[in-house]
Amino acid sequence: MDKKSHWENVFATKNENEVSWYQNYPQTSIDFIKALDLPLDAKIIDIGGGDSYLIDALLDLGYTNLSLLDISANAIERIKKRLGIKAQYVTFIETDILDFKPTEDYDFWHDRACFHFLTESKDIEHYGELVDSALSKTGRFFIGVFSDKGPKKCSGLDIKQYNMESLRFVFEKEFQLEGCFTEDHRTPFDTLQNFLFCGFKRK
Image (cartoon, rainbow, N blue to C red; front, side, top):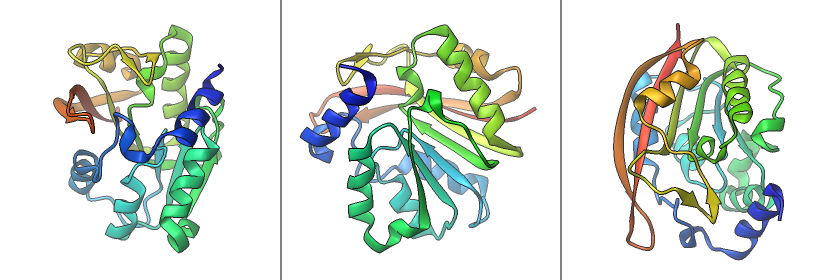
């Protein structure tokens, strides 16, 4: 099964609370965004957002310029259905992140648990180039990955674990690390996954 087929199947066969990454409210990400004090018209993109509740939370806070990228059409249809009329305020981009060709400059790039599915060096390097090409001159980004104390697989797929230094290394050419912290995510199955969250800004 190829990558797209895998994720289409996940979102076609599992309810939102039957996947390990489910959160009923993305508190960690929202706290980070609030701390940045971004203007409500800031261009924000959520990478691999699936049908997470980040977009819902940002709309409730009054943000008006939101994009969500995901490889799965099924995931996008699920969040569109949930958002209802509010979906008109979101730009949905159905593509593999590695095929993404940004056409505008974003002020904030958010990625919780997409990047760590890239395990090949060339793909990791390409992701770094994408962030650089997609962010404005004052752009910031926030990324969440499994830490070196976290799982080695997710949804049956291999992932790449990170610590602060290895994640900093990916982006150090163009970006400065602002800070990192680890956090345990409790899954719907009552297990813990240790995440590493890091914020970056342009040098």
